[in-house]
Image (tube, rainbow, N blue to C red; front, side, top):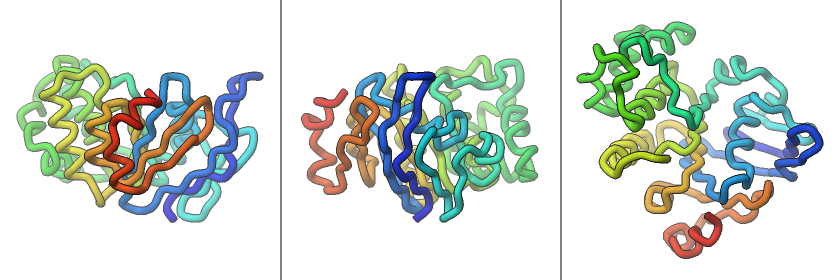
Length: 230
């Protein structure tokens, strides 16, 4: 398996937030995490990415322990975290944003741009624009594209469609479709139609616990059941 969490527990000070989380992510899987605000979804992503350290449990990547490694080391190993806030370098052009992401990976800028444009051709028309002039959805696509530079094995994406208009959600949906099977993804998402149409597996979180996993297509397609936990 590509990623494995074993009995992971995380706290903010005295407040325990994640309780005995055990989870596996296989190569090429697109797994969605759903649950109400405060269920621990973002905390889980930040823990895998190295921004938080479990006080108990372990995280294995390709069979090797990565628990407690700093975020920059985990990123260099091939696990990229895309924050919820859609933050880009607003005063730089889209091309310069891509260049900054490409530099530490030593991937050629032309190759990095081609990688992203091949998945989302509309980006080609944005390259000379200031990133600050992009819409929230366009920034999200830029962030996903930047995260793909260097060919990571796992993307951790936090709320990619939150607050976006229907048209740009459709674009993000198509981008995630294009990536399906190529890059493993663990995605926190509240948009049930997106989740039910894309997920290989759905994990429901509740009050810091991994409450239920859905594997069967009939279960994952049940919007009524999922909406109970949102």
